[in-house]
Image (cartoon, rainbow, N blue to C red; front, side):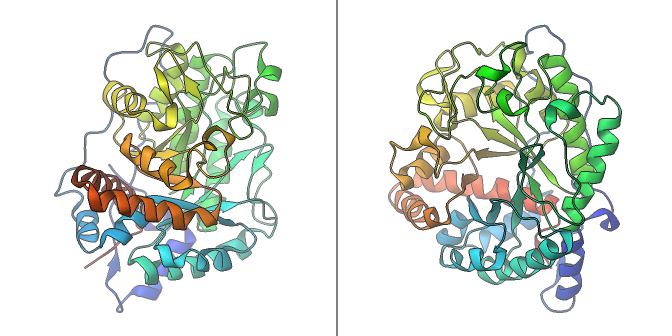
Length: 406
C-alpha cells in the first residue's frame, strides 16, 4: 500500500511529529492507501472471492507488532475500544476514560466550533492518548453529510446528504476531497462513512435508519458501489480512514436499531446484489467495515450481524476478502443490544471476529474493558483473539502515521 506524502497528512499529525522529534523517536513514515478499482460490481451474483489486499506480513507491520509487544493486557484491550466523548468537550471527555487506556475515540454529538478549535483540542487529546497508551489514537467523527454531520462551523463545509451526493457524478470525487481535507486538517483520522446501504426504489420512507434521512447514495447497487468507492478513495487519499457501513446492509429494514429490537432484514443473502457496494469499498482498500446491529435471518438465524461469526468471519472476511478493521455500530445505547449486559456486548463482538468496539457512551469503557480482560484471563483462545484484533487496529494506525517507531 502507498500513502500520500507527509504534506497531505492531517495537520495534527504533522504538529505532533514536530513535538516528538528528539524526544521519543519519530512517527512512522509508513505509506497508507493505494486506491483500488473504482469500477462498480456488475448486477450478476457476487464472486466467491476477490482480489482484496493480502493479510499483513510481519516485515511490513514491524512497527505495529513492536507496539503490541510493549503492551500489557489492559492496553491491548484498550486498543479495541472506540469510546464516545463529547464533540464539545474533547479533552475533558477523554480525561474521564483515561483509566481504561482507550485507544480510539468517537466525537459524539455535534460541534459548531469550527476546524481551528477542533484541531487544537484534538492535538491536546492526542498528547493525552500518547501519554496514556504509548501510541496515538484514532479520532473518529460521523461526517456523512445531511442530518449526519458531527462537525460544522468555520473551516467545515456543509455536506449535502448522500442521496444528493450520489447525483453529482464525476464531481463527487472533487467535492469529497474538499470535505476530507477539512477533516484531516482538524485532526480527524477516522470518518464513520460512507454508507453503503442500498434502499430499494419506493421504500425510503419506510426505512427509518437510512432512507427516511436520505443517507443512501441511491437505489441501484451498481450506482451506490461507484459512489462508495469514490468516497473511500477521496477520504483515504486525504489521510482519513474510511469506515463503510452498515454491513451487510440496513437498506431493507423497517425499524431503527437505535430505538428498536425489530430491525430485521429477511431478504439479504450471500449472493445478494446489495452487497456490491461493500465489495467495491473493499476493492478500494477501505480501512474499516462497520457491522450492522440488525438481524439477517437468511445469513444467521441466531445472531444479529454485529455478533455473528458467520457474517464477520465467513461472509465478510473469507468470501469478500476483507482483512481490515471490523468495527461495530454503537453497542452502547442501541436498543438492538439492550438485552445483553454491557460488558458482554464487547466480549461477544470480539469473539465473533470483530476488532473495534464502538460505544457512544463513555461510561461503557469501564464495564467493557473489565469484561474483555476477565474473559482473556480465563480463556487463552480469547486472549489470542484480543491480540489479533489489537494488531489489526495498530496496523491501521501504522498505516495512518499514528505509531512511534525508533
